Length: 383
Image (spheres, one colour):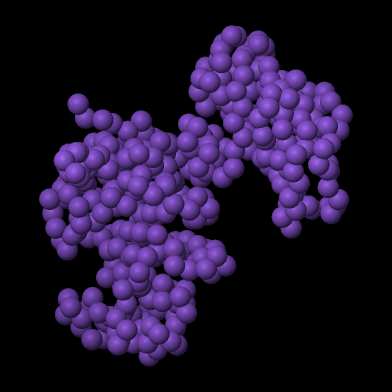
């Protein structure tokens, strides 16, 4: 039996009925034989990507994201299912016959060629007229902010500049889609953060579909219009960065995207559309129909983000309230991280912005209350 992803093909309300997906995967699987066993790298993925969308495949190493991208590019063929580019079934079509280009973590620039010649390489192979090559390369170098560096060799450029050359070389051929396999992985943190903004700017300027593979959730949140979070060859959740962060669909997504606190308890009552969960010498309040339909007596697992929680010295009057003891305080510059142990014995992380005061709101050993609004609790399933 074919295994299918829980994510629908078109879960985005922005889809029009007449829209043709830039890239579409239907029931795509990929298996390998290893040591006499069948290894499933991708398990029945269904996915559709808008024209002009910045779309990210996000997940840990070995989750199937790079294999999925390689099947889109044509470097791998699916064991089952089909790949469509702009409505055309390209399953079985060689990579060089697909109107997509790919940028890898290793930029693979020609060291003996200038920046201009590296970017012009594909156009020369296609025998494009000399005047058009000059115009298109010049236009692309302006977009990637490398005008004036045409004569330099790759060894004379910084890592970020080399990456922009690789982008320009891929984009100058005007592909319908660009596939990027962790292209920022070789850069240091500050340059990587700067290039995230640059990549998004470039994608908006050229207006083509970008499909980006990464294991770095901050990269995906920063750049993407939508994200597919992958785990064990499947799509665990598909949605906007805000939707995935604020409303994770599973324990895996809650833990993989940012920092999340997981709390388990029993629903004591349902009142005024809210479920009250007894927990940690207090209570957690969550919208009763949010994430999972809840009823009194249910055991439920909830998630709440650290920045949504407030540390109080007095018992809060409303919302969620949990008794806890501060076990660790870590100053992070713009914020302070508090690790607190609840009365139920769980460690909970709280982030407090250092916007108005450099003073800690609590110190190690303090008995405190944790408080947050009901809308910031999200039920992710049965405990």
